[in-house]
Length: 231
Image (cartoon, rainbow, N blue to C red; front, side, top):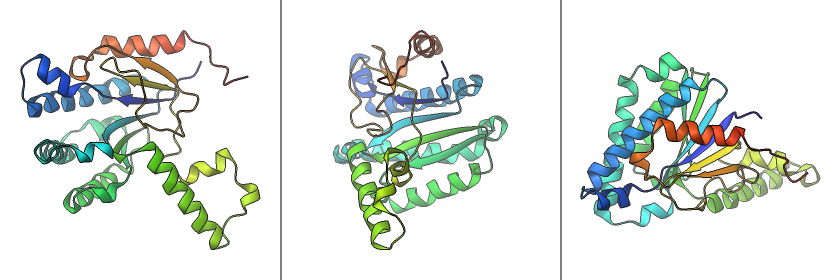
């Protein structure tokens, strides 16, 4: 059974901080380091061509000013490190950002564009970061864009189906497997349209605790399943 695309919901940073008497900033830094590790693990799985991280949901933007400021500062610093790390060029990893990016600070939007431009030539693997993302908002935005295309005479509604609708989404990528950490067993609006037939794997570990062995166990669990897509 092929595994070409995965989704990651890296949950549990705040609960990890509370359990280990850490500041939120320190916990988020550990979580960020874990994300770098997982990107490296992905590069060792030749069959996995893409991975999408639920980096920051649209709902997350309603958190306290201090927490959100700390999160965005860490993210901003990590964008800078993309240019310093050889990982992306050596492994051929392209970065793409999906979501309502207009909700981000202008300076961050500019840097996101620079990172996407820098990694655009790399085509061995795709890593997507869902930022300011909501699955429901994505579908509504896609429907509006489809309506605009119809008004312009660019599309015939009779030809629109599940497959052609995907091109209006932030991402057409459909994960074969979605992994969520922290023991929470829901998708929380992650790739709502694209994950209709995704296999789901829930780990009880908080995101900073998630190990290479845990990742390999999730991948192996996927291969042990049988997918029939409702047939």
